[in-house]
Length: 355
Image 1 (cartoon, rainbow, N blue to C red):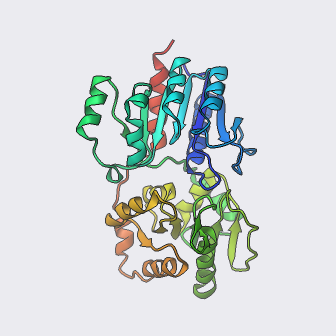
Image 2: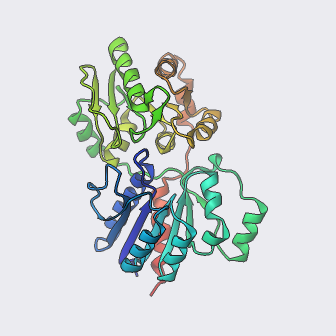
């Protein structure tokens, strides 16, 4: 029988938004599959999207991972059938989830986080572990990790790649018309959630500067999505389409139709690769340099330094690629399936034989 209630506990901080967006995508997919399901989120009260989440929200004064007592109290009270920890959670929270009889899923997004999920005090209380990275971004499990999985009869973590939802062509066309854009005739700029700060200030501001230069001097339409966590007023521009934020389906549709995507090296980079898009990326947070280097080694991204001049330089390399070799490399890459489908199938299996 399907789950009656699901509790999502994503990492939620004022600087990042990727885990929350991923959880929202999964929540929307589960709601479509099981319309009567009750969906709950535990979120940090300080995040900008706290009041805009369309599901039932339970707040804590810090990251849910740090709010052990608050989170465990909510778990006890709600008694959900499924709890999804997205890059979050202490061992005591995992234990509490199993104590009330919930199925427990954990999502990690890099080797360090995956290793944390494979520690005994989390492993024994986890039913399924998804890694939101493709195989080429992850190290093989070591012998000790493999032995633990075998001894406790646990399935190994699954490298599922990026998680996203791509709407149909009609939806995409209507979206482009709203912004007066044509397929493959614009460059999309986005520096993640908008809250990342570099030595010279906000990363989003740097990306916007690059967008203005490209729009003014190269007569290319540019759209800049600043992100939910961008703390300043949006700049007025006659050259660049400036958007604070958009829904996840709209964001993916805009990525899918762009000529070039200029992004950070977070989850969006993997989404662009899965969509076979030409992209320029810079690392703007501590977990991104390794991912960027791995993707660059496969020639699926033009890596830039985190400054305006470097972003523009890499964009121009793509624009000047007369032989089309860069595009050829991207198009001939066959990425793993959208991780959302794997997650939906695994959740269905978790509850297929439950009574």
